[in-house]
Length: 168
Image (cartoon, rainbow, N blue to C red; front, side, top):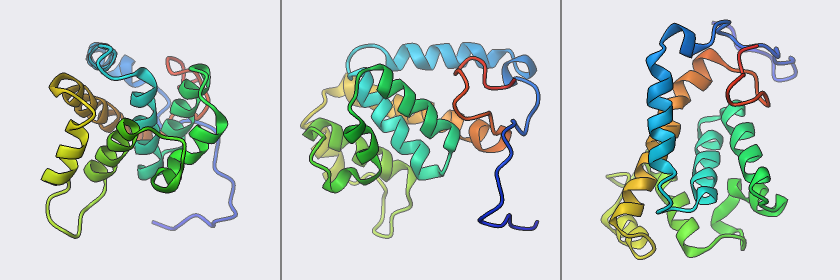
C-alpha cells in the first residue's frame, strides 16, 4: 500500500458508506448500554469526555477527537482545557482526579517499556481520587471509546458530523 503524501488532502467522506448500525443493528444496544454505564454519575461527564478525547488523540482518530472536543465545548469547558488535553502532564488546568483518569487512559492505550501498563502505583494514585464504582466507570469509559476506535479508524465516519449521523 502506498503512503499518502503529507500534503495531499484527506477526502471528506466516510470509507464505509453504510451506517454500521444498519449493518449490525445490535450495535445500537451496545452503544446505549455503554453510554448508560458511563453516565452513572460516579465520574463527572466532563472527565469521561476528557479521557475519551485523549484516547482519540492517542490513536490518531480525527473523528473521535472532534467528537469529544465538541462534547466538552457543549459542556462549557474552556478552550485552554480542551487544547491542553494533548499535553495534560504539564498543563495547570486539570485536577488531581482528572490527571489520574488521563494517566489511566494513556497507560491502557500506550505500550509500556517498563512492564505492565497499569502499575500498582498508578492504580493506587487513581484510587486516591475515585472509589471502586468510579474506578470501574472510568474503566468502562476507556473500554467504551476503545470499542469505537476500530469503527472510527476503519470505517472513517466524517469528522464534525452529528454522533448519530456521521454516515451521510
